[in-house]
Length: 464
Image (cartoon, rainbow, N blue to C red; front, side, top):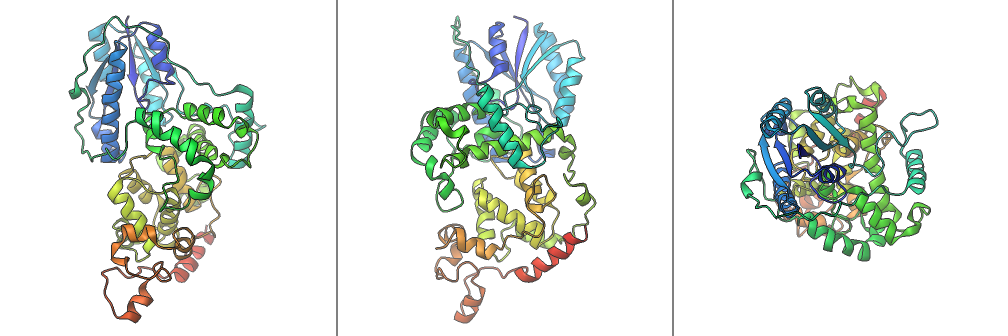
């Protein structure tokens, strides 16, 4: 058959409409195009690159059982993808390309150009539970507040159900051999094997989460010392697990979930809705991909934070234990607890008045679950520049956040071990205790004073 399946952000065989359509047409070739120059420009974290490589190898093995060959093509720059793919298709005599959509502006423009090259590009959607453009207000526009979006999203899902797509049954004539070299990247890699592969997560980890943690998720998700979250964000970010599959599993387990927002399990579904919300925003407001503030009044904001303060934040040397512990978790593991992402983002943008875009880029360059729409949405929420963001006068106090969510300092002690022997009462801001005791534990002094920083932030935002 004269066609090829183009793997992009969909490293899975389940709920993959482009793959299903390709298989139905007898396609037996899949391609993945690596673009290391573009990855560098877009701050792809080395641990995420390794995570992609591992899942690409897994996918090549799964496709091989289906009689589909996976070919790794190399294109240094983003704009080279079409040239490389067109040349490959010409060499093989392929005219049809099957691919799942990518929501970013450059990717949309790339696909339009490819469609003008003489090749037939068949695009499908599978990155959100409800496709962008299908949850609108009465004026036919995108919601600018999350709660009415959520309510409309739930109503639509009640009407349509989850559009999960199973792979057609096929019996390949033969299982082809796979070659591990097909997934070797010319890009820095950091070991990601602390995270199991998606097939293990789907078979073991997620069912265990549903059975043992789901109803406690709302109560435990904000406690960083407890493994109370699902840990699925890295798999969603690279498309190794379908969000529609997750929604379907949840609804089957808790059939009333779409009707009952008070159900203990709803807070987890709410996270999937937030994910859709940010991806729908990107679809309707493509300028976000260019670094624009969602609220125009902040577009020209002159952020006055110093490079020295930004570097201290990056290096986990702010003198606020919860902030530093969170940043060390990121630097050491490539992941950060969601509550702490809000705390450290608020600290950078409000306490230090550093441009949120610098924090956004730093996160992307380190996170195994870096996803542009969610990362951008989260940073603009914290900086009060985004859609349905926290009001500018809401400034997280890192000391009280620590007292509330890490009351015994268990998380702090894990990542800031120099404070291991500080009493619980003092560990959230230990400097006065350390001075009174006349000891030197090797922990840095605070780079700002909370009350003064808060007043400075209020004055800064009021100016806009």
